[in-house]
Image (cartoon, rainbow, N blue to C red; front, side):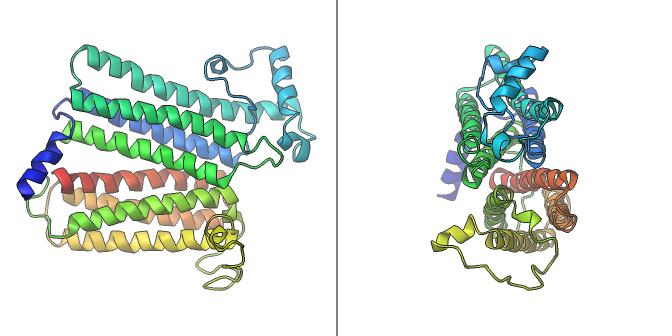
Length: 353
């Protein structure tokens, strides 16, 4: 029965051995990581609401003349952000935030082309079989959804209150992470196939690895709410918050479930708690695995997970202590993707290796 389940799982996987296709998919993952980082820069510099319309085609071309810039600025001056927050902004200052948001949108379009054009080439060369094609269509469809969701997120800050909904921001982040994970997993399948990483992997390690992946996903989601509520700015101390282990105001929002998503005290505390749990779960996974696995890719993967978890927590603490500087905050966001990548690699090798 176990053998038949493994065979069935193998049939669902893309064909292995095509190095060019696998490297292309992992290259797209690297581009997506760059876009996630650029999205963090856009949010942290307050540039996300600079472009007040969605033009997927003609929006590829930025303003190229003084008249075009004046027109874009006129559109922005009608937005709630300008009227309520930046009424004294000059055209020069507007151009700086506009270009950051434009770069983020342009990166999304370029990523789409970097995915679509090579896919068409490999398909024409018959280097993509039917199972892999299904995966690629699903990834591209998710990419289209992500673009629409990005505009849906921006729209929430263009009506009445100049602030992006933390729910929509978190959804936008999670879809990006889902695309990344799907593409990374598929790329590993193409590159590595069924080559066994370690025939002596200890019992329970795969279950621990899957549990860690779930914890990482939940922690990334909680980080989206930290970003959306800007709760990271509120408590520049660690490990205590307001001098307390469990801060006052943890359970003051009504209805009760709003505490988890809108109460900045709860959102920040829960994110710290989840990060600590991830670090402890990583330590347990590595301690259990490294006792039995002496050499090979799986051992290196476990070490990479441990290093990425330590880096992620360290950057998170530094981001809080230094009042969320852009550089540290963006590095913290990017390192979350590195941690996810390392955990996905270990889980892939334990599942199919």
